Length: 83
Image 1: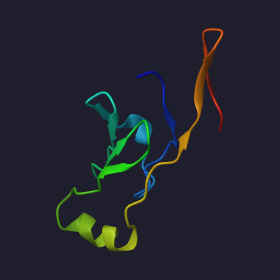
Image 2 (image 1 turned 45 degrees about the vertical axis):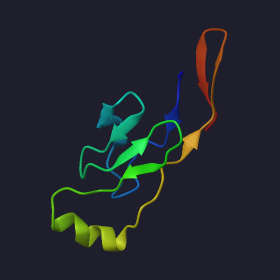
Image 3 (image 1 turned 180 degrees about the vertical axis):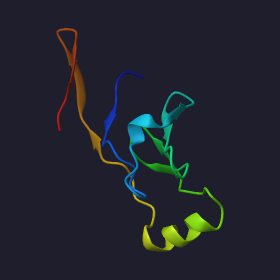
């Protein structure tokens, strides 16, 4: 669908989301606790769920929060992001 831009860290415990896995072409999975977000909208798809038991304690402190997204445009063959 084009290009999308989000903040660089997961909203759960601020892991580097850029090192996460891209799933189904439009979702990114955090490398630490497996939270998944829609890259296009930043919306939470699945909140942090790994490792079982431990992460539930963290979730009590850090509730679900979407990634911030930024407007993207392609101009003269260059991808530009408004941050």
